[in-house]
Length: 56
Image 1 (cartoon, one colour):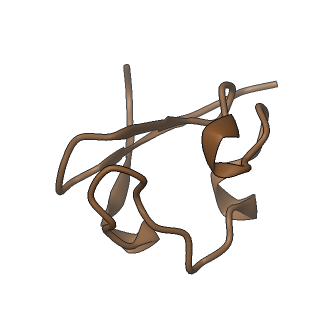
Image 2 (cartoon, helix red, strand yellow; image 1 turned 135 degrees about the vertical axis):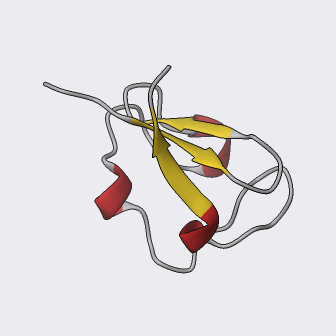
Image 3 (cartoon, rainbow, N blue to C red; image 1 turned 30 degrees about the vertical axis):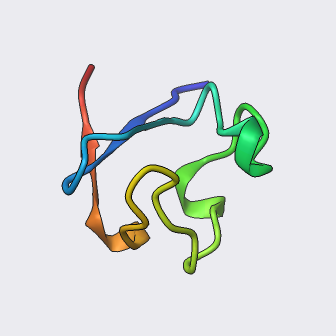
């Protein structure tokens, strides 16, 4: 499976689809499009729209 990473343009938090965000209830392997639209950055509270696809 091809996993992607997304970065918050406000604080730099990285969401990695392969790792998920278990501390926030998002299991490993969760695709970006499957995260709820009202999800916010766990570090700065920015909206999901503030994230950009990024290459690590």
